[in-house]
Length: 326
Length: 285
Image: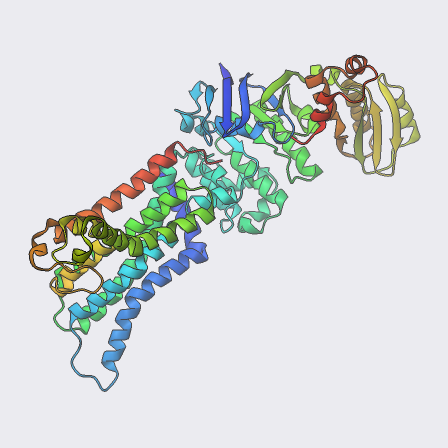
C-alpha cells in the first residue's frame, strides 16, 4: 500500500487555484522530497493531507485513510513538522512534547526526545523565549513522538544552523531505517538531495517532474557547490578534485572549497572526497540557481533546445515568467 | 476522547496568561467585591440594621447582567483564533485531535475558568449574605448561582463560536463587541422598530404591547437573566432594566420565568453547537 496517494487533487481559494489536478503517490518506506518554489502549493498539499484544509476536488489518502473523513486516523500515525507553526509561549519545551505524547497516547519519555533533538537544557524553559533554532528542534521532537509511520516535514531546516541541519538529516535517516516513510518538502535542493530517494517538483500547483535523485542530477547543469571546512584545503586536494569527471573549476578560501561541476554525481564525488580529506568538513550548500536550473529543465525543457527554438529572438516570454515571483 | 487533554493543555496556558488571570480576577471582584463592600459598610459605625439579603443579591445580579457577558466573551474569544494567528493550531490540529476534541476541550477549559472564578466569588457573597444580611434565602441563592453560571457559559459559547468561525482576531474582537451592542441596544431598537412598523403613529407606545414584543424581548439573554434574578429577589416587581408587563400583558407566556429559563437554555446550547458545525468543515489554514 502507498503511504500517500493523491488523486486529481484540486484546491481553489476563491479565484486562485493552488492545486490543479495533482496526482502522485509515495510508497511506504520511501524518503520523498517534495520540491518547489515558494507558493507552488507544497504547504497546501500538506494542509490537505493533514485535514487543515478541505480539497475542492479529488482525494488524498494516507495509509488508505481518507484525508477528509478519516483525518484523525491519519494524524494518529503521522508526525508533522509544519511550516509557519507557532509555539505556545507560556508552555515549556517538556510540556510541548508531553502534549504530543498525551494526544497520541504514546509512552515516550519527553526528556529522551528533547535530548535526541539536542535541547535537553531547555526542557523547563518557556518556549516563548526560544530562538528560532530551538523552536524548530522542539517541533521536530514533537513530530517524533509515538514513532510515527509517516513523517511530514515542511521546510524542516528553517531556522537551523549547519549543525542542526546535519542532525536533522541524521534523524530523518534514523526514522526511515526504523520503517517510517518521510515526506520532506523544501525549496532547497541540497537538503532534499542529501536524503531523499525520490523527488517530485511542484510548480503552480502541478507536479512537473517526478523521479529518483539520480534522474534529477542528470538534469543539472554546471553549478557550484560550496563546502564549509575548518582548515584550509591543501592544493593537492584541489588538484585531485579538478581531475574528476564533470568538474570544471575548483577554488578555495580559508574555510571554503568551491567546486563548479556539471551533473550532481561529480559534485557528490567532490564532496565525498573533501569529507574524507580530514580538513574538518562541516557542511555544504549548492548555489541557489541549481533549483532554478532544474525548474528550467523540468518546466521549459533543456536550455540548449530553448536557445535553438528562440533563435535570435530576445527573451522567451515563458522563460521570463518562470523567473518571476511565484 | 482527547478533548480532555485539549482541555487540560488549554487550562495550563490560560492559567499562565494575563488574560486568564484578569478574567478570573474581574469576575471575582464584581461578585465578592460587592459583598465585601456591603459587609464593610455594615461593620463601620454608625451602622443601623443590616440590609436585606434580597436587595444585595438583586444588586449583584444586576451588575453581573451588565459585565458578565463581556468578561465571559473575553475569556473565550481567543481560544481558537489566537492559535490560528500564532500558528500553534498546527500543533493543536496536527496532533490526533479531531475538530470536536479541539472545540469541546477549549469550551470546557474556558468554561471551567469562568465557573471557578464565579463560584469563588459567590462563596464570598454567600459568606456575607448568610453571615451578615437580613432574611437570607438559601434556595433562591442556589438558583441564582445556577442561573448566573448558565448566563456566563452562554457567553463563553458566544466567544468560542466567534473564535472558531471568524478569520482574524480583529474580526472576533469586533464580533464580541457587536454581539454585546446588539443584545444591549439592538434588541430594544428592534422591538421599538417593530411597534413603529406595525402600529399607527398615535398608538405606538400604547399599552398593552402586542405579545410578540415580549416574545422577542425576553428572548434576549440579558433580559432573560434579569427576569430570572428579578423573580428570585424582587418578587417580580418593577425592574428598570427590562420592559415591565402591565395589565393584560402579565398573562403572556413570554413574561413568565419559564420563558426566561428556556431562552437561557436555548442560547447556552445552540450557540456553541452552531459554532462547532461551522468550524467542523472549515479551512483553518
